[in-house]
Image (cartoon, rainbow, N blue to C red; front, side, top):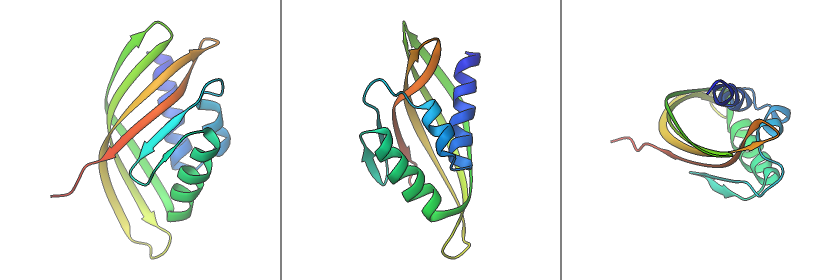
Length: 129
């Protein structure tokens, strides 16, 4: 589980810093990857980089602070299925407005050369009521 926590820490860091090198390191490069999020559905690492990291995280937010909690993992030979909740605090670039959103996320990981890599992510934001 230590390697899973390390991967998740890198994932959070890649978003908080909008660090594309770190993002490339944690995503699987051998198979197709996908990322479903409220603003889109990306089908390759290049799309994830362009539309999620650059087009959303970097373009919209001056500061980002993703926090994950309630992590559960199920292991299947060379794959793992993760579920967790998150809080996202950010400052919008356009007007300095501070926001806080919450949601849930699932990740499918694959084991490549004894290292866990992200293959698929699906997250949903909780609706404010």
